[in-house]
Image (cartoon, rainbow over all chains, first blue to last red; front, top):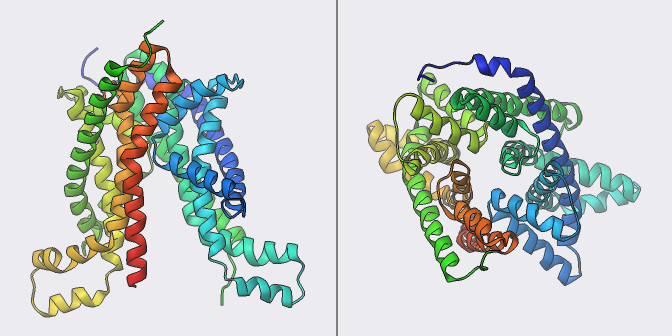
Length: 222
Length: 216
């Protein structure tokens, strides 16, 4: 072992690393899906007329946003089995990512829904649209458009956060890298390479999110 | 079996907390100083500086903090610089904070009316004075809510130092948890400590935001 860089071992384990990238993408997409579901349900619960439900939702949001993800995932890792949920590390990681992303999603989506003036809904109904149409065309679409940049930004953050799931040995890029590192001792080379891979993943997601926005959220206003 | 969580264990966690706070303060101070340069470079009239800083920011915002920590930690060792763990970690957090604070402050600088710059120019203020006396004081004021909000991110981020073995609050929690075999209780306590460190800052940040929104 010298101080000379040797990326040979990294090239040798490239297939493993690429599978790790897929693991990260899978983890992130699963986490985002759960986060969206929690986000939408959370907005309803946050605005509910049942006080306990409102308080519980606010408590959940504040706890998640004011504690580190590392502590959250450790806590869940040990607490879930106590609740009778014996899950493998990857499933635990997906739940942790979903809960974490969900708390941020609630606040973002709530902001979007609040940005639609009540008069618009009323105008839609007055024009003879069905309730479903009003919700889909007049509330959901403009709200989604308003929050799209912050929501997708949050999702990219969630993807990067998923690297912390390596600490419970979930299957994703960082844990694959840690295994290669422990076998080859080429720490810098391995981590430098996967840092570039993460950069590529977040640029890819950014491009994809922008394309989706151009396709579905691009309509003239005013 | 371990002996449960007693005063010794709590004391150990509080020593960890001390390092979490110190590390956050170093990263915020260092990141603030470098971040000012990043923000000024990002809004400079020179295209090279603007593009360079934009790339700098997107690299730090597009990669996991954990990777930045690993790359700096092992990279310094590779080029023969052997620093104590806390210093290597502090450098990584400082660089990360500089990119995020730089981006927040860039937004604030660009939110100022152009007339401010034009008026200062018309008065013949040199660039340094324009920045120091006119632009930055106003921009940093607008950026207050986001800056305090970022401080919460930063404190939470320092928990990742635990993964490279530096003993701050989270690592202290891991150690106590493996000694006492009471992980749920220990990580619960650690979570509560982080919460009471971060929550007041979050509240302060949203209070500031409301104040600025009302003033507008």
